[in-house]
Image (cartoon, rainbow, N blue to C red; front, side):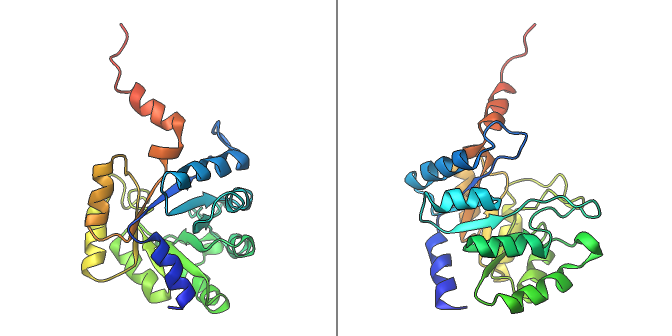
Length: 233
């Protein structure tokens, strides 16, 4: 690993990465708002930001000076993979300067019925100095990702693939299994709602953790509290 890559990873170590994302159907869908959200997160002590789309990343990079995990969510009719699914999205993230590029590294086929192996191998050769993070749903997927040359693995998709549905989140068992096998660095993501859960993720062996919904999606936070209210008669 190059010194530049190591320096970026070091900035994230032991820290909280805040996911600042709002999809088109959400009230906060705005690159300006995501930029301000990222600023609030950085002022609160976030060591990094996870962001979706070129426009949002540009706004965030103009606002904060912390490493950005960049993704582009794109839907293709022939694949369930939507996190940075093709080379078009990777190229756009390279151009916008995302310090880390995250992409779906599950066992599912990508658009065009392409495997992760055939998709990622040329990217690794073309961009040797770029940090790539594998969003995985199982230990086996993370192990394979490291073998393919990913720099970081994450638990982002645990519970979100057909073969991991119903898994308890945050998936500290997956993190511990990866840490025990010395597969990593590991970013814990998914289902973290409390400081105690954050501590459990780091205690299981994660380098850092990503929290999104519990911090940056007020509609979902409100719904969570509303569900706790007594039903009206």
